[in-house]
Amino acid sequence: MTATFGRGVRIAGTGRAVPAQVLTNKDLEKLVDTSDEWIVQRTGIRARHKANEHETVFSLGRDALLQALQASGVNPADLDMVIVATVSGEMLCPSTAARISEAVGADDAAVFDIAAACSGFLYALNMADTMIRCGRAERIAIVGVEVLTRLVDWDDRTVSIIFGDGAGAAVVVADPDPSRGCIHQTMHGDGRMWRTLYHPRNEREVPPADAANPIRLGHLRMHGREIYKFAVTRFQEAIKDALDRTGLGVDDVQHYICHQSNQRIIESAVEKLSLPPERVYVNIDRYGNTSAASIPICLDELCRAGRIEPGKPIILVAFGAGVTWASCVWNA
Ligand code: COA
Image (cartoon, rainbow, N blue to C red; front, side):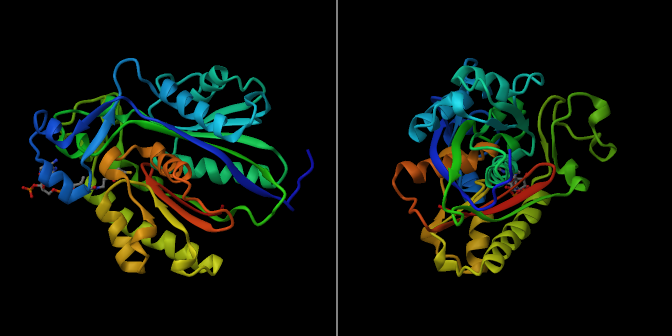
């Protein structure tokens, strides 16, 4: 296919799916040594969804994508690519994208997963925009989905209170207007920090400094304070850089969609950069941190509420394990 840079990209439809069971902070008080007050004050989380044995990364991702396809009017057989951002897929091989594409009837699509943790959906959105913009694809489905509650040690009160399960999806398509879609993007990583959040399955995967860590093998190990400090700085830098590079003022942006990891991290960016708080979307109180699903769930809630105005920019930022971080200025 010939590269075609004179065109843009549009979000044609979005969707989301979350498990039926809601786990409130009060429910958690019965499982670990914590309190509703501590969790709300330190994170902003009040409840999260938790998958049962039948709800999986595959099933939630499939349901979110079916919704997004229906909203977009795109025929699944016409999809060129299905990208799934996840670090909690049930099967290492094949990709979750392969199984989801079969379930939705995307029979002629390239399929692969991205493991960039909480930045995964933004990595995928940035890549999809680039592929379409340069004429390598016309229609791409992106899914962000996690069932991290299965990887949590329920005796670990710092990790078990944070994560929730869910999926969000978007179908992006070529648009004749080149000003639409991603007008600025960044993707970063710093592998030297991978030990701040990881999932060891055996002792060989545990760094020596963590050997005495009491968290059981096969569960997430997190150094929350270190991640917190890193995330506060990176969020602020990423938003400031996005505004500077595009010449946008803080009031020109219709929505700031930040990865929902901790409300205090988002609030520190609002304060430091004087962002209009009413334009900074927050739903962490209802979902917790759903990792790769957090940004597409926000996007879907805004789309379905009719709150995305065409022609106006949105700034999206995320950070996650790896460590990874990414940003995107999306002209709706
Ligand atoms: N309930 C009650 N007390 C808790 C607790 C809980 N769930 N978790 C930790 N504490 C206690 C600690 O034991 C500590 O007690 P001490 O002072 O007696 O030693 C105290 O609270 C402070 O612990 P600290 O870890 O410094 O808290 P914090 O303010 O950093 O909050 C996190 C912890 C995990 C909420 C916060 O660090 C965070 O959100 N980090 C980022 C995590 C993240 O985003 N991970 C995903 C990457 S995308």
